[in-house]
Length: 123
Image (cartoon, rainbow, N blue to C red; front, side, top):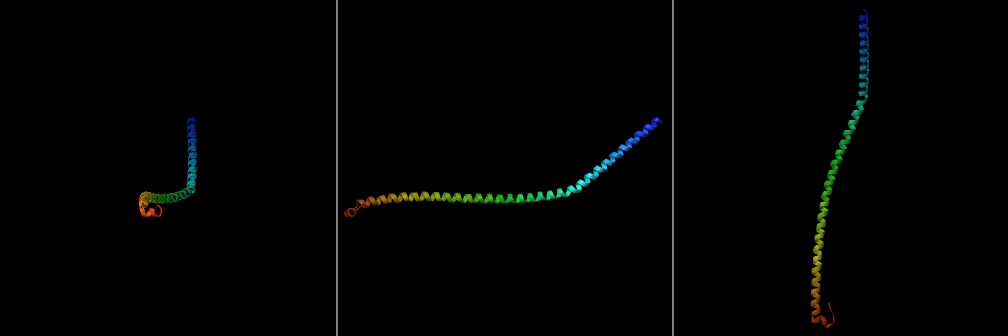
């Protein structure tokens, strides 16, 4: 009988432990469900904000790419205008040098001409 009493007492204690664990599991489950009930709307709201930020960032990235393309194009235009300006400067310098040579030639011809020397003038 003592053994039966001990076995019954042990089983009773085991049943009590299992019941306590079941209550603890039920309480934990209730706490998790409540946390999810309050947390899910916050998570969904955060996801919505993240989606909006992602869309905004994508739009800004697209705009930035277009601006970079425009800048590259304008830089090319400016470079071509600069090159043309440099070519014009070289051409004008060559023309100036030609004009100076022509001027010197005309001056030499005029200064050698007896008609120009009649009045004592020089070109």
